Image (cartoon, rainbow, N blue to C red):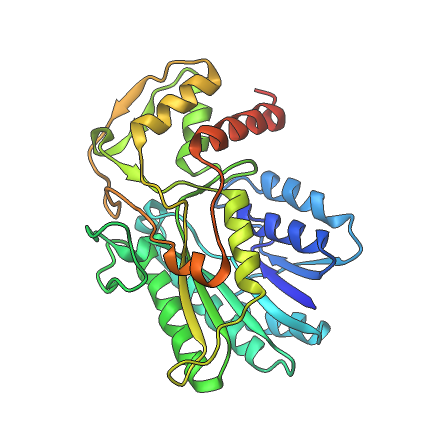
Length: 325
């Protein structure tokens, strides 16, 4: 099996590539290596993969139709796609909205069009987000809940990806699975995520921004659990149901953690007391997330194993090693 992984230099994508290679798969990775955050970190992630013979990398933008089609033509044995490339970040969508429609909507369409033309195609797995639940107050979030009231452009584009996928599953019979990720963290993580921002500022003796005056809860999911879930889903395309082959699942830790407790674990791991800059709720943000993973358990045996009490110290140890802090 040859698997195409988009966002191969990203946090989740690079880890997915690593695990697929370890189990003997051929992997084609694509990424545009943009500067939304430090490209050197993306390059460092790629360096862990480039020495392996079964890994091929192409620096392209997923919204560039001709370039994507050339990759599929070069590797006619591509049988599955793990589509993780996206313009991430809720707050950045307030500054550069067009980056979201280009990458998350147009790029998704380009990939689906290329994949549906492959003769032996088996499964298209793509990253959605817990953001699609908007300001839902029914906890935990179930895939059966309504998701038609997004509170950010980022969430709207992720919901759009789900709708586009539903249409392709119906029109072309493409096996497609969308995964709603819940706040992923861990070693090699994104610098724009809360954990990395907090660590960086605490080490520099700077105050850390805490929104909604600290009254926030998140379902924090460790990277190894995310990877385990994605691989399990990839190996089991959805069966046909109601005239299409499209399924959506939550991939989360099934625990909603208080943000202030999260910060206290970072303080213990760093041996530092955080100076906290309490701020109001930010536009597009939500107060709490919490994943119902019962369907993911039932269909894939998914069971997250890493709590923030273990995962955050692992992240801090990696941060010290990578940045020499």
